[in-house]
Image 1 (cartoon, rainbow, N blue to C red):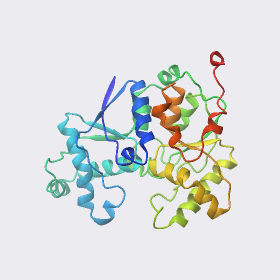
Image 2: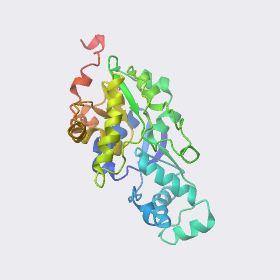
Image 3: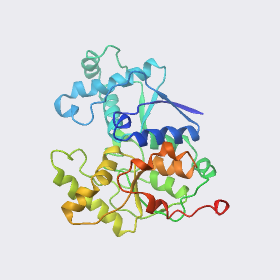
Length: 294
């Protein structure tokens, strides 16, 4: 079993409970042991770095220090925003002068010896894809999926160091291994409007509407994403987008861990499909049932 520290992030405890619960369930099923960081705190995403770079780094460095206290050197998080903050803090702490300033704000100093990875990276690099395929009991045959990574999962490449920064394939390969038909989606790393949902809703409706339109054009039955903010913009705000753009989008937006858990035959209670705003039943109904289940 692969063992790694786990940072759920604030979204995982609130707006994306289903992402956290499905992440924990699929990792357990795939022999990845997630060890929660005790007394973890918010990483400052997304506004802290706009106010004070030292304070922003210290917020994430505190969690990295907690991992060091655990005696571990790797941490994983499902949230790309949290991942960006953790990796940025680790990078900045390589500078002795900056590390001194940030550590002055912490009770426990951070030595900068922890590598932060996304859960998607862990599943890609530490779990054999053939092993995942061997555990599939409900193949996703029949559903067409558009994989949407968002704009920060893999960028900037010199910081994130995972997958291709313009044409990432980790989710594509995973969904294909589960039996889904992955449609060619050219906007997989385009921005959805990120955190402009409150101050500039017009930006979110325009950018997220562009993504939904592109997904519809390539025949996607559903999106999969790895980002709580992207999922919220495409799913929760889909009604707002329809109203603003005079559209009739009705495309479910799953977390990739939800469909992975479905294919692995995990308890649907931990997958949280009922928390999606756009009804996923039509898309899930396109999945052909295994012959033995008919």
